[in-house]
Amino acid sequence: MRRYSSLPIRHEAWSLWQLAWPILIGQLATVGMSVADVAMAGHASAQDLAGVSLGVSVWHIVIVSLMGLLMAVNPIVSQHVGAGEHARIGQVVRQALWNALGVGLLAMVVANLGALVLDTLDIEPAVRDLARNFVLVISFALPPFCCYRVLYGYSASVNQTKPLMVIALVALALNVLVNWLLVFGNLGFPRLGGLGCAFATLLCVWFDLAAMVWWIRRAPAYRATQPFTGYEPPQWPEIRRLLRLGAPIGVTYFAETSAFSLIALLVAGFGTAQVAAHQIALNFASLVFMVPMSLGLALLTRVGQALGAQDPREARFRAWVGVAMALVVAAVSAVLIAFTTTHIAVAYTSDAAVAALAAHLLVFAALFQLPDATQVSASCAIRAYKVTRTPMVIHLTAFWGLCLPLGCVLGLAPAWWPWRPAQPLGAQGFWIALVAGLSIAALGLLWLLNRLSLQWMQRAAPALERKAA
Image (tube, rainbow, N blue to C red; front, side, top):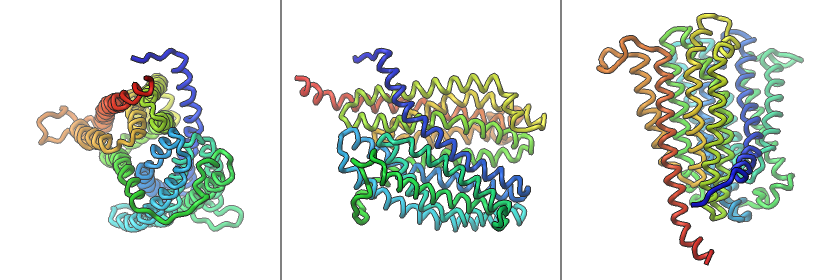
C-alpha cells in the first residue's frame, strides 16, 4: 500500500489552502452583505428590521438551493482540467450558462408566486408588505445570480479563486454604500427604508455577474479554457446531464437549509429568550462554518483534477488530506468556542438571561463543529467523483429522518410519545438533535467516500499495471 511522508501531506495541505483562503474571504464578504442589510434596516426602524429579516430568510433558502443545483459545473470542469481537455471546458460552461438562465427565470417566477404566501402569515401588515416587496424586488436578481454561480464554479475549478474574493469584497463595499444611500435617503436619493436593501442586493448581484464576465474575458489565466470565444444554442443532452448531476445537490442543500429554518420556527414557541439565544448560537456557528465549507469547495477542485488525470490514488490521498484538514480546523474552532462561550454571547446581547442561555447553547455549537466540518468536506470530495444521489439520501435521512424528529421529541416532549424526557428541553433539545443528525451524516459520508475512492482505485489497477509493464 502506498505510504505518504509528511512532506507530500504538507504540500497537499498548502495547495488546498492556497485555493481555499480566497474562497473563504469571498464567502465572508457575501455573508457580510446579508449582515449589512439587516444592520442597516435595524437602524431604520423595528418594522424595517423585521421585514428585511424575513425577506433575507426566504432569499437565503432560495439561493442556497440554487447554488447546489448549479454546482454540477465544478466536478465536470475540474475533471477536464485534470485530463488536460481544456478545449472541452468552454462548451460545458456555455451550456451550464443556458441551464442557469433557465433555472434562474423559473426561480424568479416561483419566488414571485411564493411572495404571495407571505400574505397568509399572521404578522404586522407593514412587516408583511415589506417582506413581500423585498422578495419581489430581489427575485429579479435570481437569473444573474445563477449565471454568476456557474462562472464562480468554473473559475474555482480552473484554480482561479482570487478573482472570486476580489469581486465579493468590492460587492460588499458597493452593498454598504447603496444601502446607505437608499435605506436612509442620503445625498438626495429616495428614502426607501428596508426596501432599499433589496435594491442594493439586486444591484450587487448584477455587478457580480458583470465583473466576473469582464475578468474572465480579459485575464490570461482563462485563455486556454475561455468560454466566451464561441456560441452554440442550448443542447438538451448536455443540460440534462448537468441537471441530473446538480439536482441532488440542490435537494441536499434545500433539505439542510429548510431543516434549520424549521427548527428556528419550532424554537419560536419557547419564548423570546430561547429564540434569541438560539439565533446567537446558530449565527456564530454559521460564521465559523465558512472555513470548512471553503476548504470543501477547494477540495472538490483538487480531487476532481486528480480524477481527470486518471490518478484515483492521488484523488483518494487528496480527499483524506482535505477531510483531515477540515477536522483540524474544526477541532481548533470547537476548543476556542468552548472556552469563550460567555464572551461570544455577551458580544451579541446585553441581556443577561439571553447571554446565559446562548452561552449554554454555544457548548453544543462547539460539539457541532466536528461533524459539520466532516460532512461538508467529505460531501464535496464525493461530488468530485460525480456522485450526488447517495449523499442526498444520507443528508435527507440525517436531517429529516433523524434530526427533526429527535429534536421534536427532546425539545417539545410531546405527551403522546412514549420515550421522551420528563420535561421539554426547549432549544437545547434541538441542538442535541443537530449534533446527532450531523454526526450520522458525517459517518455515512465518510463510509461512502472510503468505498467510492477504493472502487475507483480497484477499477484503475489493471490499467496502471499494464502501464507499468
